[in-house]
Amino acid sequence: MGKKRRRKKNTNPASSDNIRRMLINVVDPGEIRVAIAGPNGLEDVYIEKSGGEFVHGNLFKGKVENAENNLQAAFVNIGAEKNGFLHQRDIIPPFGGYDDILKRRRRKAPEDIHKMQPSEMVYKGQELLVQITREAVSTKGPSLTTYVSLPGRYLVLMPSVKKRGVSRKITDEKERNELKKALEQLDPPKDMGFIIRTAGMGKGREELQRDLDYLTRLWTAICERAKKVKAPATIYQESDLVIRAIRDYFNSEIDELVVDAPDEHERAEDFLDLLMPEYKERLKVYDGTDPIFHHYKIEEEIDKLFSRSVRLKSGGELVIEQTEAMVTIDVNTGSFLKGGSSRDMILQLNKEAAAEVARQLRLRDMGGLIMIDFIDMESQDDRRAVENLLRTEMEKDRARVTMLPISALGVMEMTRQRVRKSLRGTHYHTCPHCKGSGMVKNVDALGSELIRRVRAEIDEKDADVIVRMHASVALPIANTYREALAAIEHKRERTVTIIADSSLAADEIILESEV
Image 1 (spheres, rainbow, N blue to C red):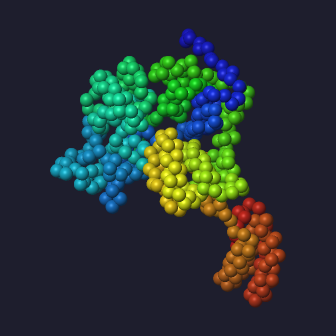
Image 2: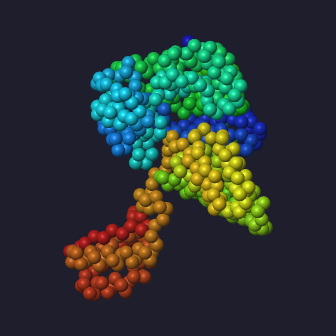
Image 3: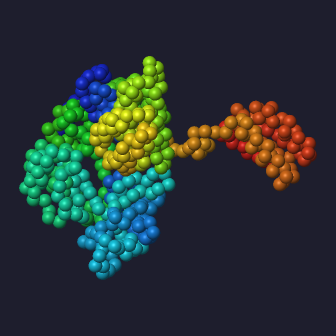
């Protein structure tokens, strides 16, 4: 009989203290939520639907469906609803790599492999080992790469390259050199690449060696599975959000790790035992009566992330509009400038907005092209001050970010790496009535449309017409356009009947001919 673990209860009150916590909400079915909260409230949030297979980081044995030279890409069947998109630059030259794992047609490599077209690199029916780099978004399938990378706690294994290095986020040159020496002392396999992650800073050889051994064993298991299964097939699935969050985000700066389900608490404890035993005492199980996110007063903050507008403490406001192609953020003064509109006040508002923009982009996980319209600033020095503050705040973001200077009109363009669906994309789908516009036609527009359609319907079918409309607009239109409808009835000697139907959308019109 196994040893019964003694669970550590959480007795800390949900008051504002100086403790930073990672909170894991897994007790509710269908969804896993992880939040990092500190003295100033919500800092990060990660939400994932349970059971997702085609997510970022998962590995597949896929089959090439076609190669499109004009798109510089190939499309690969990995068993998902849509084929994955494999760009030419993500194909290991010359023929996709992993020759010792995958069977393929023998071909002679050209002298200059860098000038190869996708159709020369892969062929229809070829099996490839691919990894998802970006999840499917809207009508687009997942993005793929053949350059596999497997993250551990302190290291990242890259079996297709021989690069050895240190995360670019570690900027201290002395620290970088020491980590490079530590990596070489581990004597990693010569034919594989390794990168030391930021979590590896200050770690001893034993901890790094343990991570390296784990990753090499994992790669061996992946290779064996890839040889046995037939494409398309899943080769390796990333750990669920609970383990990934602890692996990637839990560090010495987080004082408590609180989980709200006893079985997940034990899984977390096993993981910490394996890779981070020094942090085990920070792990607690939450057994309060109210939900964990309510107890720590962050549920309301998460709800606000779905709002179109964000109020700033000064009285200003951010208005966030998100489309498939881009995100626009408008900085409004609101009640901020009631006392005046001096240069200093505008600069203060834009700085506050810049800090909140960085936070909202991170929390909402919005990617792609982003346009930020700040309050106009005449001084170039002021524009640079806001720009520098935003750059500093964006350094906290794990996603890759590219920023252009703020223009004379106060507009900044930037891009943020899009890896998975945004927070809104995981919880909402496009309204079938307004098609994502957020607007429906008013009574006047509907009335004019109704007259045109009724006239065309009678002319085409020479029959009486029954009109079905939502109850909220049926009576106003029947009253307002009574004379116009009566004129049509008289001229064409047909009747028009309007029926209220609350099952329809507010601006939907259905015509039925009745001979």
